[in-house]
Amino acid sequence: MSKIIRRKTPSVSVGHVFLGSDYPVAVQAMTDTPTADVEATIEQTCELVSAGSELVRWTINDDAAALGAIEAINRLRSFGVRVPIVGDFHFNGHLILTKHPQLADLLDKYRINPGNVGGTNKRDDNFASIIRLAIRYKKAVRIGVNGGSLDPQILSQKMDVNIRSGKVQDVQEIMCDAVIESALESCAYALELGLPIEKLVLSAKLSVVQETIEVYERLAKMCEYVFHIGLTEAGAGISGIASSSAALAVLLQQGIGDTIRVSLTPEPGAARSREVEVCREILQSMGFRHFLPRVTSCPGCGRTKSIFFQELARDIKQYILLKMPEWKNKYPCVETLRVAVMGCVVNGPGESRHADIGISLPGSFEDPLAPVYVDGKKVVSLRGEGMKDQFVLILEEYIAKKFK
Ligand code: SF4
Image (spheres, rainbow, N blue to C red):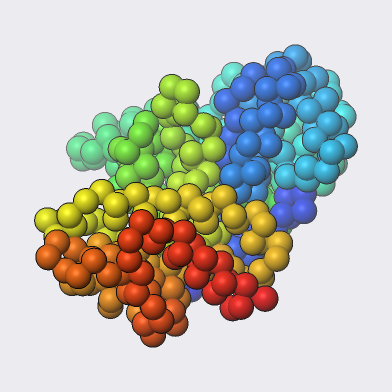
């Protein structure tokens, strides 16, 4: 397997978390509670942290949200939750942060969107106010350019130049050019104001996979800033997961990206932490990080004669999830474990041998025996109703021995 070389970026500290090419790609998420609702914000933040979010962003859009954030951060810290909290500011961030110095000090990072920092005449002043506060309080800043809220001045200038040039440049191309220009100009201005590069993170997100990839690829050649990557407004459900995964995978494979977020529209009633699970699955499936033991299972086909195989694959995965908090404390590196649950003799023994521990169930017309493989060797064949419990027992014994 080819080794992926991460694009070299500086180390940026955000609270106790470090971002950059010397550190693992970090997972982040954002709450959707009104930040003024302290209880709800704390609860959802804890849910995201439990799911594995390493930074959490909150909307801070008015005084009530600012006061709520101050209380929520103090309470989180008082019960030992250290996750860095990022304040998300649009339009009035300069006013809120100036009016609430305690908030400016408590937050670990400010996220500002250069397209949304206030009226045209005041844009530079408002932007500069936030950067100066970040410098004063030694905070990291993410300059987050977004295709949906692009600096209108840059976009209209580019449109005018295009019209005058007589060349018919595609609107999407102009959009990508404008996103890049806004990102680079804003970062350069922040540095000029005195923000150290070790406090700067850049994101430049669009809602179309190919455009997002293009913009980050081009930016990667033009600057060395730490990148937060993701597809903005990815959508809901499977399509949001697939399109985010496609964009992130292409970039990560090229070593581009120091932190990621999957911006899913939550299904009604679904957990907000779904976006964290998807981030972790992407990083783990690409081999960048290990969070949980991997369960390899086949899709099943006409050779699987009952749903027992599907149930066993699901139950083993759920068992691992349930046990991980305990295993993580007891067994170092248990997250690197590979388990296989396979449907029949066609690929079952092969995949089971490649895993640390695997079971190959009997398909149609096979003897009702399920051989279990440990470290590539068949150790026992299970049969009958207690098969799952017996396999779990072998799994527990294996983990206790291998990861002690
Ligand atoms: S391993 Fe067997 S049951 Fe599973 S998909 Fe392949 S042929 Fe079908």
